Image 1: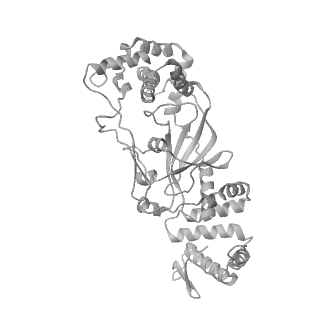
Image 2: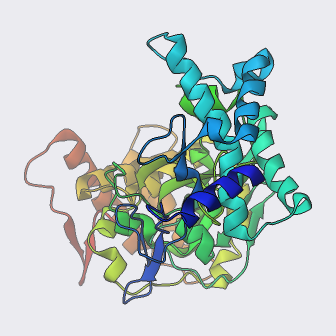
Image 3: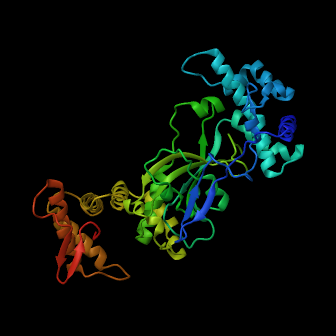
Length: 424
């Protein structure tokens, strides 16, 4: 690494092209939601130098230093080529089956080990062997350690919190604020292909973190370019979102799932934490897409958040029909149409309150009225709840069976008007 750095410095001293890094930008919209952007097309003149970009398998106009120009780098490549165990972990099998292409990709992978250390050392001010060793070990573990410890970071989009510290949900789950470095590291790229607007992805201040996970590691080459689907903890994320909706009645959701390596790294982006986007989902209400980042946040109070650990624990241990009810009632908040929201909400009520099909709407209404009228705080009027649930279920039946003339989302009970999609 030191020899490669010296070669890069000599090249830059001669003048000419200096490759540079355009770091992600972290700003904020008027309402305070983060606005993240990343561009590598036109770096600023004062952008940091991308030292590793000076090197390539062959010397040319854009790669003025060949790997072979640095004897120490060439020796590292030869060492890996000569050891079958290392070669097997780093080599990338190509669809062409051509040995020359596989060997060239092996060469690039091995050189990247040393050159990534050069970039990271310069970015973080590392200048001694002792300080370099922890960086080297992070890259070595990415090659050799199996399995690899990881945790998943899932930003909760357009969901504001009063929380200023970590909230421990259970032994493997927590909610934590994201600092500026984490925000920058998760910024979507210019050419990311996703159905989620970048403005929604960026508009998050806190993240759900799921720990205690491991990633199979056949080697950096096979792992990075393999086709095995990485299991992501969507069930855990959905469970916490269900608990948050129950505790707060506030729309919550997520879009981005990131992997945070623990004690190892495949790559670094200058001095930022090594976060990798694993997948992007639309697990949030459609209203977030409607310029949600320009609306004022409605923070979840610390008092409401204290209910979340107990709710998550109860949901994890709940009977199947209770889990189904919670999931369906939560899914109703994510549906795009009123009809779908009504169906989901009614399925949740059926799962929670019914035991059969006889007089289903009567028993649903009766049990809902009993439950809400006898709660300790803010009891509801039993007759109103009974009639309201009967009308909602009538609307649900009209939606499911396509009955014309009885599908208005608005209904009247006494002097009050209710929305069938949200009343349950």
